[in-house]
Amino acid sequence: MVIGTALGWGTIATIALAVGLAFLFGYALTMWGVLKAGVKFKQAVKIALAADTVSITVMEIIDNGVMVVVPGAMDAGLASALFWGALAFAFLVAFLVTWPVNKWLIGRGTGHAVVHAYHH
Image (cartoon, rainbow, N blue to C red; front, side, top):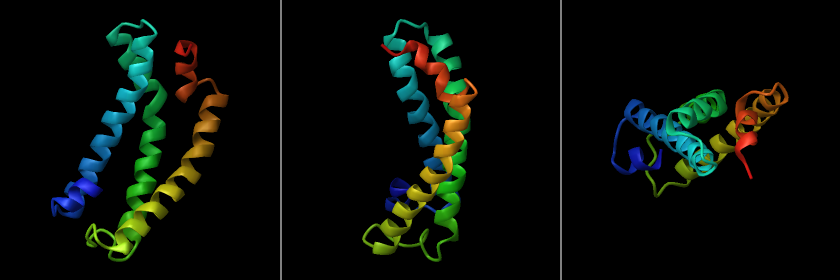
């Protein structure tokens, strides 16, 4: 959100960038630990996809959805309290929705639970 807003991009381009970066960094952070555990790259990709796809998807739908529905948030600049307040609120709502989703996935042995075998 911050990068697209700083560059003056429109709503769709800003959301596309935010979602793309969320997946890129989410998968990369998971893969980093898995690769450090000695897993080959191709297998690490599969593990990251299995571990993070649902979580990141839910997080991004909620986070970006909240930003879109808060009046004026997507058009507010970086110097605006509206932008930062809406972004913080969006993160909070997305966390509150994603947390039970992740707990449910882990309880089923899916989601981030697939990574636990590679933690030392």
